[in-house]
Length: 298
Image 1 (cartoon, rainbow, N blue to C red):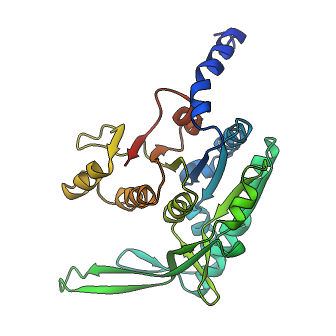
Image 2 (image 1 turned 30 degrees about the vertical axis):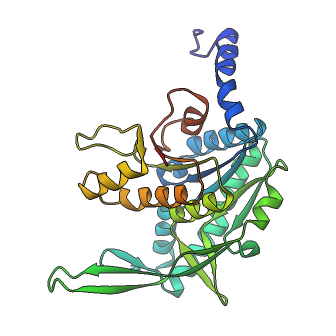
């Protein structure tokens, strides 16, 4: 290392050489990356992420970026004076909320990510699930048990949906042509209208339909943790089900790993849950022997 803390030319060449087998492994393959959490709100991390995505495309990988935007949606709802209604801890997306969700996800956030990738030398295009009927969603409901009566009831979440049909025509037209699709999880409803879909679930549906080599879920945690809060670096689908059953995987991690299982069942080779706050997390996972996060495989 030099005095400035940068790699010497020789070390840089060695690092690039060691990455070659990994680059060959993913040559012309599709990688779906779900990008969200606090990493999106940090401009330096966001620009670093954008450079990494451009690097993937330059090494003959086909990256597809799916993004969320929960914190930004919350901020805009507050600014607009729209009060969210909750049922059993879940946000109900009414018409007023949906309007802001669509505006923020398919508008400002999507175009900001597109702008960062283009500024890094890429050619990103912003799309959402409604474009080309890419994803048709159906209404999502949740069953919850009332803590007072212990009676199970169905919660109507309003305009919250889950993927029902995926048409990859638009993506197949774009991929392999130096274009990087950036997708917002706003989807069409069958017969018209819109649904807000969870970004993890949306990414799993896209990855499955594309038969992606990898699905990377960038989160705010290192990955799946064991009961001692230590990172588990590799799990099979059967291991995941066992860890859910014994309570090791709980809370908000359950829907994430369920998305992983969904994607694996539809042909994705493997899924990784990793910490998006770690600089160059995507490159560490794909181009080094050490990887990052928890790898879940069939």
